[in-house]
Length: 386
Figure 1: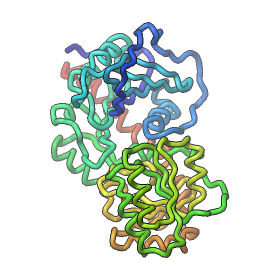
Figure 2: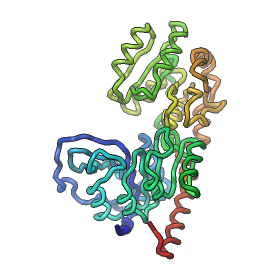
Figure 3: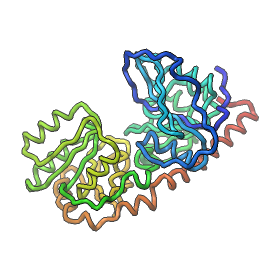
Figure 4: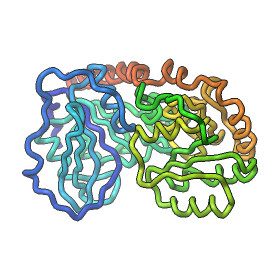
C-alpha cells in the first residue's frame, strides 16, 4: 500500500495491546474533528502509567507537540476522550481478536489525519499493513513482557527501534534482525515521573507491600510461602489493580493464617497507591517471567527499597546496593527479615532521580529517534522506504 504522509503537527501515538470487548455502538460523528493543538502549551507534567509517561516525556522534551494513546475495541465503535491539553485516549475497533491486530478503522484514521511522527506499539502488535502505512514514522516496539518479541518476524522487521528490558532481550532481537537498533529502556520503570510517587513521612504500619496484578505470573505464592516461614508479626499489604485471582489469593492467605491485608481490584488512583506504599518499609517484586515491572522505580521514588526475586528475567539491573536486594525463592523469607531491619539504610529515591527519571530516559531515546529519522530521509532519497 502507499506510504502515508506525516501529520502536519508533530505527534506520537501509543498503541497498547489492551482489548476492550464492547456491545456499545458509537456513531462516528461523536468523534468530532481531530484534536489539534492550538497555540503554545505549557510543558506537561510527566505522570500516569507506562502508557502515558513515554509520550508525555516526548512532549516535555520538545520532540512532539501532541500525543494519543490507542487501544483496541471488539464489538464496539470508536471512542475518544481528551485527558488533557497534551494527551488523548482513543478506542479503535479491531477487525477481530487475532494478533497482530488488523484494523480498517485504524488505517482510516491514519489516512484521514496523516501518520504520526512517532508510532510506539506494545505487546501483541499491529499488522504489517498498518505499519507500512506509517513507514514515514519512527516506529518503536516494546513487548512489555518477558518475551523480547511477541510479534512475527515479518512484522518486527518493520520497526526502527526495539526497546528491551534486559541485555538478553536485545541479543534475541539482534539474532532475529541483525543491525536493528535496540535500547534497554523498558517503558515501565524508565520514564519515571519525579513527584507522582514520593515519600510522605507516614508511620510504617506494614513491613512490606506488593503492588501487582492478581495474576499467576506475579507469583504471590512465592511471597505467601516466605511469609509462612516468618514470625507471625510480619505484616504485608497486597494491592491489586486488576486480575482474576484476587478472591483465591485472599482465601489462600486466610487459610495459611498470614497477616496480609488486601486492596482491590478495582485499582485505586496513583495518589492512593503512593499513600499505601508509604505505609510500608519496603516493596517486593516476586515475579520471574515479567517484563521489568514499572513498580520497581515507583516503589523507589516513594522511598521504599525493593526486595526482588533473583530469578526475575527483566529489570534486575534496577536493584543496586542503594535500591534494594535480590533473593532467590528459597532465601526470600530470610531476606524479608533482613529488609525489615535494614530498610532505612537504603537510598532508593536518590538513585532513581540520578538514573531513571524521564529526563534521563528521554535523553537516551531522543538520539535514536533522530538517527531513525535521518535513515528514513536517506531512504527516501533512494526510493527504498518501506
